[in-house]
Length: 474
Ligand code: NAP
Ligand code: MG
Image 1 (cartoon, rainbow, N blue to C red):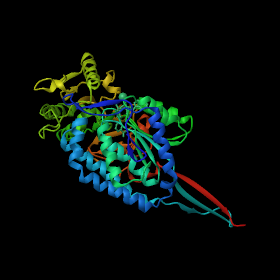
Image 2 (image 1 turned 45 degrees about the vertical axis):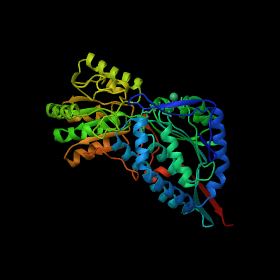
Image 3 (image 1 turned 30 degrees about the horizontal axis):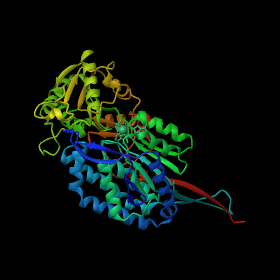
Image 4 (image 1 turned 180 degrees about the horizontal axis):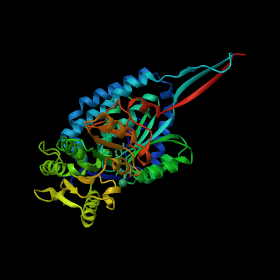
């Protein structure tokens, strides 16, 4: 763990595994509530001086961290592929995306402005300040084990907050590598703190119960996010929540099914389907279904699964055997209720893949609303195709979910695109675009997909309070 500027051990340790072959990659300290308390105390002690530091100092440190992370791109990418499983090329992309947040928020640090507001009385002045919220506690998932950390840490640090972070149990080595970057960049002791743990509950409870923590930022499942937000409410702590998703991928009646299928395979395959913005329901106008399914199946069946270190591989393992079981349960449920298996539908065990958690990329057609996969986030390489007959069905079908993170629309018609852009209750909409994310763009969900936005100009606001000063001149 990294507490108050030093690497420290816990009384116990736990192992991190390679999901492609089950090998142990290393052991890390197994922290508990006492370690979390120490880390929070260190962050609280460092907070006043860090909050009072100039934006230029914070900006320079973040810029230095960006440089170091880019210098380590290759080693960080390899570590990520070994610990999380995604193909090396995707890991390289993630390291750059993760580093982008350091650079972007090193710039935003210098643009935190207050305002002078016209006051109602002649002898009165209104001025606002924007000040850091204070100590931030962060909890992050395993699917993007570097960028999900920097997406929180960079804006918090730029705003003048200190931070305690608990990474996912499955990817602690990536988190340690990120903290080495911050250490080597020269952040003062106590400004960034890391507590690794196999059991998230004691650390999470300390974060929500400790009055020194003023903000919780969480990325993970909706189930856990709700529990954390509920606990944080007892002290009215600020919360940001980046939660699950159930993205519709819509082919309008005038879409090109072959072009759309090409995009569908790319975005569905992202991180082996283990992404919060992964499409989970392909809504296709019935006359387009045969051409779309044929192209989707042909492309999906060609994907090569294996260790991400092999550069010809585009599908990595799922994170663990529970994930395999969940994915297979959804496929079996759909098949038992009348869906048709176009390809895949089973675990991959040949050529040594049995040592890891590999599932064949799968296409299901004839999916209907009574199936588990219609409502449940899949987090695996399954593409369920649902036919609709009338354009008026699109919005009710697409919006038929409690989630609201990402949605995708294929149409060459501007008016259709605009109507759907406005009518979909999702926070991120790709219009003929499967990659509507970048550091400068706000990322986040509506409804049960979350609260707040990360990245973009909004990203730093999550870590700032607005304070109003009313001055009487008489
Ligand atoms: P998860 O089970 O909710 O875990 C996320 C983090 O919370 C991990 O660090 C986990 O620790 C911790 N945690 C679990 N139970 C906790 C508790 N009771 N108290 C405190 N912390 C707790 O989610 P996941 O399976 O790792 O990640 C997948 C989910 O994240 C998906 O739903 C996905 O859509 C979502 N996600 C959302 C975004 C977004 O930006 N909206 C981005 C990426 C992922 P352990 O690792 O020890 O369990
Ligand atoms: Mg755990």
